[in-house]
Amino acid sequence: KKQSRREGEDGGRARTRAISEPQDHHQLSAPVMPPKRKRIGGPVSAAKVSKKSATGIGSGGTKTSESASSSSSSSSLQDEFVQLLSQPQFRGKGIANMSLKAHFGDEQYPKLVPIINELMKQSRLTMSRSQPSHPNDQPEVYFALLSSEEATKLLGLDGQAKMVYQVVEASGNKGIWTVDVRSQTGIPQSNLAKIFKALENRRLIKPIKSVTAKTKKLYMLFDLTPSKDITGGPWYTEYEFDHEFIAELRNFILMCVRRMNRGDGVTLKQIANKMIQANVSRVQLSLDEVQQVLQTLAFDYLVEQRSVTADGEALFVAAKQITTCCNFGQWEDFLSSDFPFRGIRYQDNIYLSAHEPHHHS
Image 1 (cartoon, rainbow, N blue to C red):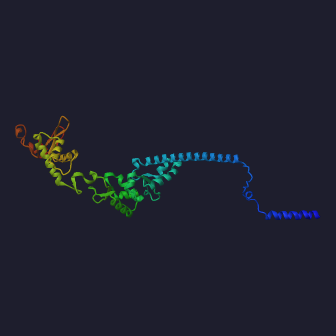
Image 2 (spheres, rainbow, N blue to C red; image 1 turned 60 degrees about the horizontal axis):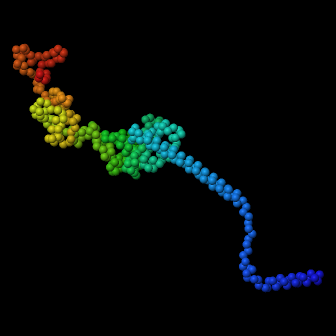
Image 3 (spheres, helix red, strand yellow; image 1 turned 90 degrees about the horizontal axis):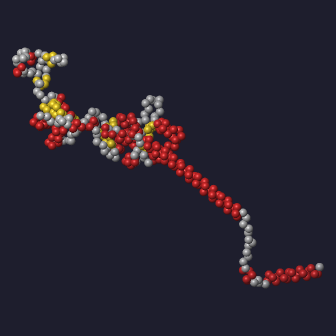
């Protein structure tokens, strides 16, 4: 027991001395290296990463391929859609929705929805509804395509205005009646009047009148010139038949027939060239228009065709005198005295009554 107590006292003094004495500075600053750790599953983890990376690359390539294939299919479908609506029969009013379903089929038709939406955002496509022929029928939806130039012109206009523009454009230089525009588009008259006004302010369309129906209001594109069927051609001035102008032309042509080529005959081209040289017409007349005036002289028995030239052109001369009573003075010895006062029946059963107008021969 004494030995154990002595060892305990010695140990306590040693611990007390160890605490009170300072330690060496170098020994305290020496780094303590942590034990090395073993890398557990390193190659496996790398393999997993490599496999995942490879899998990701492979999956991305497949998705890219599928996306490219889908984009190519959508592009070809859009080209087919645009080509179909560009056909002449679908200009203006457009193509019916039922016709689209019949053309593309049940598989391709639903894929047209994003294409139609995109074209409408670009102002390249208009959509309208037709008026049903019967009250029980449903209105049909029509799609009409606009060119890039037309889309630029109609930028900012709504679908109804674009549709009205297309209908007016389809009428060409003959114009279209406002009632026909309303029946083709199905737009109410109150809205249609506002649309016409907006298009007129943009100088896209213009109102015109027809010589055959002065009360009807027609519309055509602003840059077009009305056809002669609408304006009446050179024979009308401000939608009124110009009698004085035509009378001047008739007198000039009759003078040409009597005086040119010593009265032995003149061709239609010679008359037309002489009219250009004399500047008798306020507008340029075509050969057909000169022939129309010449024909009126023939109907009045003032001009007639004698023969043709070597080139096959007709020669016109002044018509012979027309009278109701002939003086057969040189035939007095052969004809009865009352010959001028009675009718004559010829061998071909043609009967010429007394005092009937006829050509001298």
